[in-house]
Length: 376
Image (cartoon, rainbow, N blue to C red; front, side, top):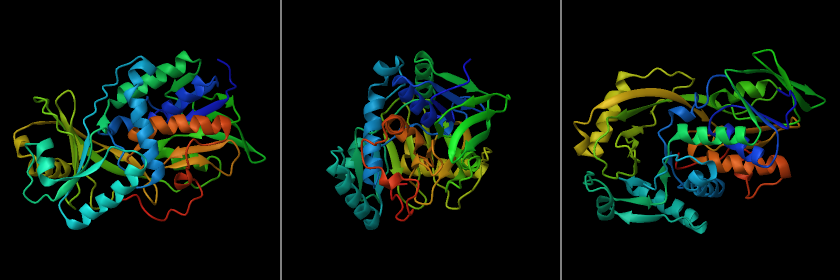
């Protein structure tokens, strides 16, 4: 194998494989390094939801482009990724939450998103089995959906290989050589050194460690989150329900019948731990049953934990850095799977043409990290 590449990507999740695919499609020689196996990090532990309802212009537009890409993946990649337009329904049980939804919808609709504020009765019409006694209304976007992250990454990885790129799994990047402020090469755990002029850090929960290899401190930290999946039951078309109460959560019925969901813990748990807890199992089951009582006797098949890569404002860092040739697509803050396809396409354009298709200032490396994403 040649040891010179146009771009070396570190990380084999959705961000790395999507970017690698679109770069290789442009004719660049790509090497992707993954220290474990593809989807072994955050991507393989997500709950499959894909939404366009965000509060900042950049993330709204990125998510909308991602949905367009998800819809066309069967044709683009030659693989059915189990895309389903099942929608996202954000639920408001307080006036404050309802007003926040209104403000966000005003921004989202400026970009043409098919989202609207709906009444309690309309929410009940979408999910007849839902408990709505304390509900005030919701934000409904029918074009949001879900897909299978393992199939999506497989599709992108197969595409990289078809386009002449290389993927090395079980191979960790252990050293990046920088000379005169510019990247020169990557040395791996197998002892090989590959030369390149461009490196993309797409290492998810390990992004900070990769940044340290070139002497920069990327403001991203791993944070442990848990999830569960139930047995398969009759498909009743429950969209992703996002209960915005302080003790709420979010869950969706997969096209295969299972319910999959999680919640954001009140006390944040830093680190990359993957151990699941009885406390989560009990609490998540309670929250799902409270919202949809018909789930009371549905069995939980398994639960797991994974890492979000958190930034101070909850938005990704997608940009070049002060080290020439070193780029970042990191800090997805729990939104990597849904934003990954478009971020890959946009980053491929930026790395080859030096320009973005939209304004990306809100996701820039050197931003102030002020106002937080409200729909975290």
